[in-house]
Length: 280
Ligand SMILES: C[S@@+](CC[C@H](N)C(=O)[O-])C[C@H]1O[C@@H](n2cnc3c(N)ncnc32)[C@H](O)[C@@H]1O
Image 1 (cartoon, rainbow, N blue to C red):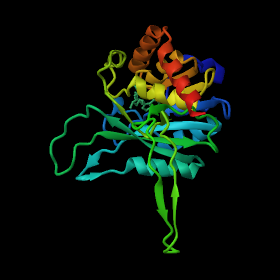
Image 2: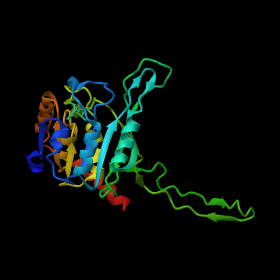
Image 3: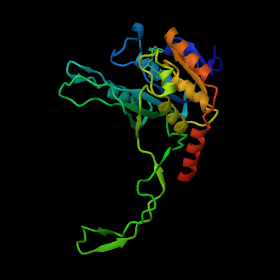
Image 4: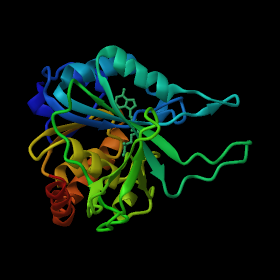
């Protein structure tokens, strides 16, 4: 089978093996969350991290992006640091570490107090193959939109006597969103569709990355797609997708979710595009 045979389908298999049949540089965007630190054994499946990263580098287009969502387990009193080790390995293989983003959970799972604060985030490492080719930034309202600030006084300390005044412009209505993104986990209606899977990420998270790093008609890959969240949102946003997962059970959940996904959420894209227009 070739790349085209996997497009807009969920395929059961070891992603490393399946990706070997893909063409070089065929994927625009990868969004995935791998199993890590044996937190869940997903029926004991093997996970060849280094092999998968090399294959991702081969199949990603020049300028394409990989979003890798991962956290760290705490083992014997110490966080493992797996997330950092993996991020550095991506760099070794040739990816740029484009942005270290945070997925903040509004409703983190409460933890037993062990002299540390409750963990409420995972990393979303954004890797790129060369210079990022697509960025449609999400915009947010400025807190002080329209406010005319007073002149700011600058003092040049190397020439102790010199002073000058500069008038600041009024604060813009919108600005590019920061890189800490917050989501409610598992409570929204469409996230509930995934409840047969132990660790789905929120639909909104996938949506925001798809809008940010790809355009309509692009190819989005999730090599460990679990309940199919990335594929569902790619379909909604008129992207092509490839979903792979080693588990037959999770592939079935993903296929069911894709069947439900026949309505296009116009509101989201219109709002996003207005944001992009304002940024220009
Ligand atoms: C954290 S979950 C992904 C959840 C997904 N993001 C979602 O929203 O449902 C990791 C997935 O990796 C799959 N997996 C583990 N090893 C794999 C492999 N070698 N190839 C493909 N999938 C694999 C597991 O079955 C599991 O569904």
